[in-house]
Image 1 (tube, rainbow, N blue to C red):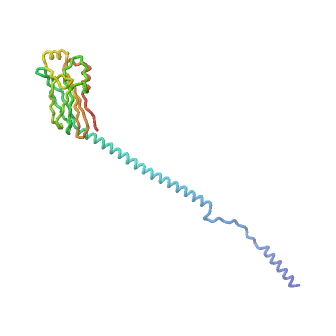
Image 2 (image 1 turned 120 degrees about the vertical axis):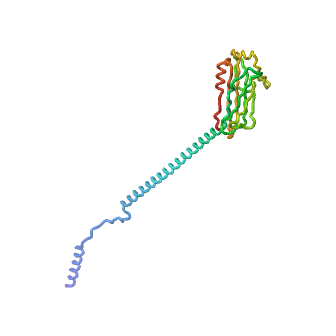
Image 3 (image 1 turned 180 degrees about the horizontal axis):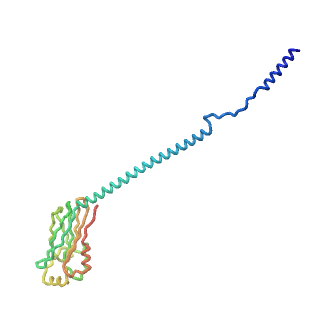
Length: 253
């Protein structure tokens, strides 16, 4: 009896001990530091900033490259423009310039009416292939003169300078006033008393005009036009056309 009750008391005491044992409170499972949501957000934000910074850095770099290219292009363009301007200025300065001084007079006291003048190269380089279409004739007061028209049906003379015309080496032009024949050639005008009276009274007048063409050493073609006359019989329209015909070219190429 004593052993049976003793075992029973022992079991009760063990149950009471178990019942009185403290129960550990439940705790939530902590998140691993490497997987925290805050860290993930910070990493995402950091990556976004990094990409944005790289974008701006690339944009700045491209902007600098584009600016450098633009500046280089503008500088190259300015250089070529300056080179072209200098080239044109050099050609204008060095080219041949052909001119023809007007005759001092058309004398009427000889057997013919001479036209004495010369072609002058006032440039710095020779003129090549000089040719001159020219007309010197007597016209009636009411004649309509086609100044500068050397086409078919308008007889005239063509003169050629031999070789080249060097600067400060004038080429003499000695022709006479006359009547140009349709079949070619010219009949010299004799200044008799009747002609002298007609010119003095304004019934007839003398007109001399022409066009000289030539090439410079740069193979650019040029021209010089000239026109002058004598006598009060020149109409205002003819005089205007004559004055306006005096011209030179501005060819650069």
